[in-house]
Image 1 (cartoon, one colour):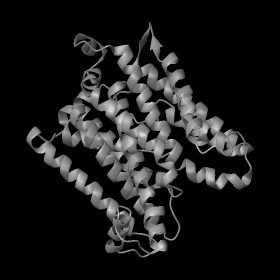
Image 2 (tube, one colour; image 1 turned 90 degrees about the vertical axis):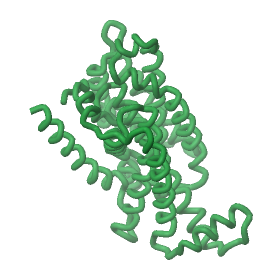
Image 3 (cartoon, rainbow, N blue to C red; image 1 turned 135 degrees about the vertical axis):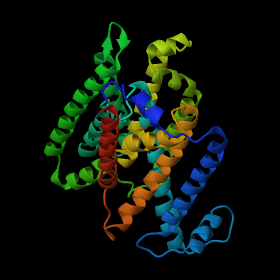
Length: 355
C-alpha cells in the first residue's frame, strides 16, 4: 500500500459486497440496529431506568401523560440529547472519512489526514482558554470551523502542482499542517489557566457528556445538509475515486467537485470536533469496514457508512459510561483501542497480499 492510494483498487477487488437485492434489507437491518442500540443506551446508566420508563418519557413528549420530573430529566434532558449527538458525530466523521478516502484515493485516509481536525481543535481550544467569545453559545463551533477552514486553505495551496490538486502532496501537506497546529494547541494549553486544562484535555479526547438540546440545532442542520449534498455527489465520488483523468472523461468538473467535497468533509469534521471533541479512528475504521461489506459504490457506501458510524459511536459512548462507572472514559480512548488493532490488521492484510 502506498501513500497515494495505489492499494485502493486492491481493497475494492478483495471486498465482498452485498448484492443489490440484499442491500435494502441490509440497510433496514442497520437502521433497526441503530434504533435498538439507542434505546439500550437510554435506559443504561448510573440511574436505573426501565424500558417502560423510557417509552413513557418519550410518549409524554408527544402528547402522552406527564411523568416524574426527575425521570424526565434523566431520560429526556440528559440521555436522549447525548445519544443524538453521539449518533450525529459518528455519522459525520464516517461520511467525512469516506469522502476523503475517495478524494485522495487512499483507503486509510480519515477526517484528520488533511490537518482539518487539528485546525478545528486549535480554534476550539483557543476559544475555550481565552476570554474571546465568552458568553457566545456558538463560540466554540465557529472557532472550530474557522480553524478547519484555515487548515483546508493551506492544504489546497500547498497540495497543488501545475494548477492541479495532487493527492500525495495534499496528504503530505495535511500531515505537516496537522503537526504544526497540534504544536500550537499544546502551546495554548501551556499558557492556559490550570483550572481549565482538565476540561480541555477531556474535550480533546472526545466526549458528549455535556450534551444538551441547545447543542443539537447547528450540528443537526449541518450534518443533514452535508449528507444530502454528498448523496447527490455519489456518482462524482465514484468517478474521482478512479482518478482525475477518468472523472474528466465522464464529464466531471474535477476542480469544482473536489473543492466542494473537501469543504463538505472539512465542515463535517469541524462541526463534530466542536460538539464532541477529537474522536479518532471513526472516520478510518467505519468507511473501510463498510466498504468491505457493501462495496465501493458511493450510492450504497455513503448511507450505510452514516448509519454504521452512528451506531458505532452510540455503542462507544455507552461503553465510556459503563466501563469505569460512575466515572466516564473519553470516547477517543475507546475508539483508539478498537481502531489501532483494525489499522494493524489492514497493514498485515495489504502487506500479505502485495508480497
